[in-house]
Length: 254
Image (cartoon, rainbow, N blue to C red; front, side, top):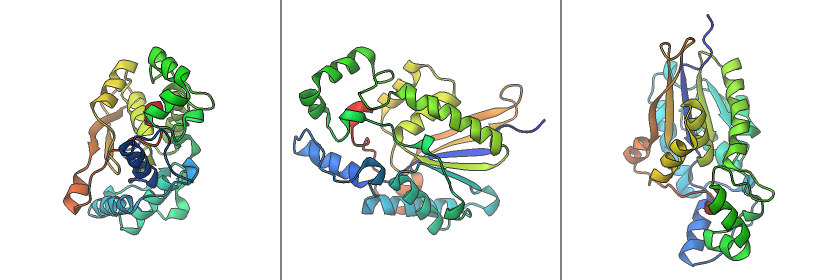
């Protein structure tokens, strides 16, 4: 019987972005709006995010060639694509960037009208949305023009189907965003709403952290993926790159 799932699946959050830095500055100044001119899709890595990506690339490069990723899927957002490119430049990915699979289903959660607002900014400008979120919870709340966690999960179900259909037995790297990492965990581990929100509440997904699954032939009738490590940041610490875990721009909408 043909193996459905990859042999290994790594899910990496992009390196620290300029949006993360701008969000921290807005919070420190008590501002309601984050000062960044770029569209979310165009936000670049910060200099620290570049160093984090390079450090993780060297960690992958230290693996035997037969253990490194041989398929790369990335969000189309600039910060995710640039993270993948720097992993390649550091020697960690034998896959040429021209062969990366750019998959829009891996994009950041869309915040709609709440984009670029801090928590206090949402409460000031859209108090009704703050109340809807309190009543519905972050899993189900969909801001106008944006997405709920369930919306993200719906598109990620489709992305996982593509991975299982085309990349069974391969070594697959996914480069995405914090909510993407969490929602993929929800799907791969068959979690409940309360279980994944407990994971989220325990701490943010670190920039350039590694979440890794390995194929277990004894998991289910056709085998399955088992979590090997989550939010793994040792490659950054060993390289002396600061570990950052800022939520993305609209933290309250995340």
